[in-house]
Image (cartoon, rainbow, N blue to C red; front, side, top):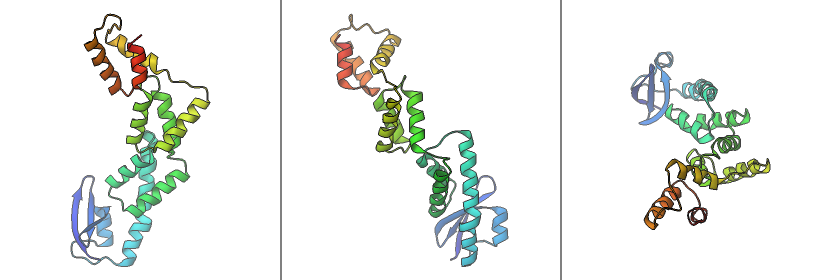
Length: 202
């Protein structure tokens, strides 16, 4: 294994390329410690020490510090670690650790997101948001089931009425063109077509 490139990064960090491929990110002091420079041969024991000891500890600490600020999904945390230049092996080990310690829990995240969003977002919009955050459709469905099992109900009709009121929209006075525009507006918000029609055709 040969160091083929050292790429400067912020905060005194350097991305190390081995055999033309990005390998990991180290601090400049660590480069000196392990005598890594362009053209240097990386001993197997040196590589293993970095990948199995130095980086896993750093990745775990990074994970803990991130979660102190806010909750993360598994995929969001994966992205943060990828952006940090951690090798795939280290990322997977860190995610396994985070799940085992309950630092991340996609079902918990989805349940909290539903609880915080159900009064201002349609179910479809919430589900789309969760998918974008890396929550699977199955996990989102289970979170909804648990939320509803606790006696919670989402009132999408009331949400739509609130949106109409904010726009000072009078269903009774609206003409066909205005109704069509409002239908499109509510559809973009993720509301079901049948529910929209029932509201606008009252």
